[in-house]
Length: 174
Image (cartoon, rainbow, N blue to C red; front, side):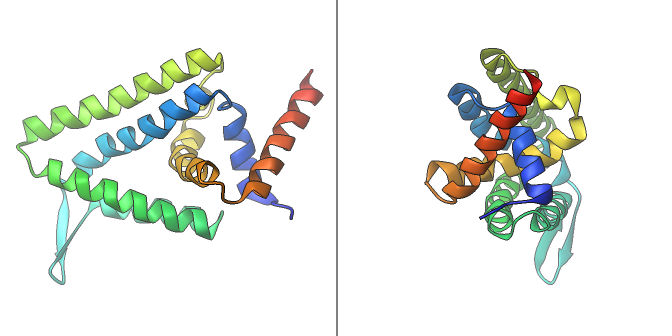
């Protein structure tokens, strides 16, 4: 089964800089932590819609979900579930006094990024964030979901194809 187009480009480009198990582990913790930190301030602005509070964190996660739907439906649906849970937790923290929730947001956001840089130092690879910040911001949350699928052994054909393309690119560059 061939996986073409945007999905393979995104996965191959991102996975090439994330091969070391420690770096992957750090990203699995750091990326949701960064998301959490970024979402807290977005929960400060919300609207009551039919008895439910919808805030900018929800809107942002729905936006990411819609983009990810163009790449892969199963990954996008799992992302939506995880993202809305993180957004909900961010909403609880966002209800704390602004000084407290802002401090938690900053610690989570910058702490998550610090962890990413440590992971890349171990891998000896420049973070995608440095070369392509927009691509990194869009692909990092998706990468976490993809890694979850890999950890539980789902869609092995996709992961074998991604790894084959990474090895092919490295051979061409050598």
